[in-house]
Length: 382
Image 1 (cartoon, rainbow, N blue to C red):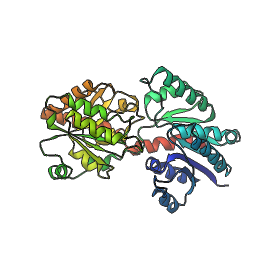
Image 2 (tube, helix red, strand yellow):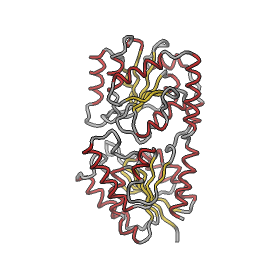
Image 3 (tube, one colour):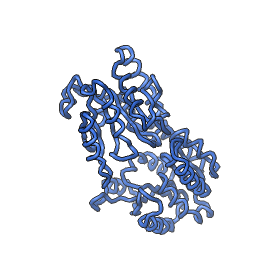
Image 4 (tube, rainbow, N blue to C red):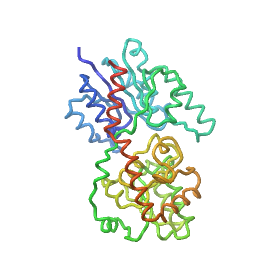
């Protein structure tokens, strides 16, 4: 009888990190299906659904709400996933905290019958910087759900240490979730003309931020930091990413930059991040919470030093004075100081740091994480 595996994610775009996992399972003899919210904001199907069809992978629409685990939409999603599980799977691999909670609860009776359940957190919603109330709420929620899985996979050591305090016997860490170092190392671009095409002059100090425009990504702290630098006119903050729906974040960032006298370019969603990285002088990842932060790793792979928040996954690769600087995510002064330091490096210091950035990024290459996932699947499922 053919083995069946179900991959469950919140949104279709998250499959970017999981195509290799799907291929690994297929190579292990599994018939793979995917359950997720595959609809775009306008109600049209995501492009990933066509790719799934071409790969012979069955798709199930689940109306996940990524904001609250107890919303009406997620009660509906819970019922939907329970229906999908009736198809009978020998392996269920769920990703991210809300989906992980709903799926593990829905799969309890199947796990008693021998189904293996794996949960990859991609970043717990509680950190050592969370309030006591937030930490207790989300830690206990995760600890409760940990009774109902055979393995918890994390992508940073803080989360791994917290996972080890829970009920699940098997806890793992994988390095990255798909960093393609070659794609970012080997980019040929005319830096001056490419910078000019987005409104950045040759002598500007280009600060690059990549990520959705949201409270969690905390891009506003970079604007506040730049406003504190005496020669702020030398800097331009290029920010790539879409604003979270109904957040008002884009307008807020525009107003904050204008009031602060900071040059801000909102570049929107881009498909040329490797090229933009090679045009940047400094990359920033100021998130208040981050499981790992692919944008930071991609910058390092492009030999660009990173100023990042001293949280969770960012600590894994931003090393003070070696690949960039870590800062309190709520301190504009610390970010300003770190940006100043990277702005005045000597040629020798720049060369040393660029080499450190690349060597560090290579430790997170997808070839390493793919082998780690193969080993985990083999240990849990066979």
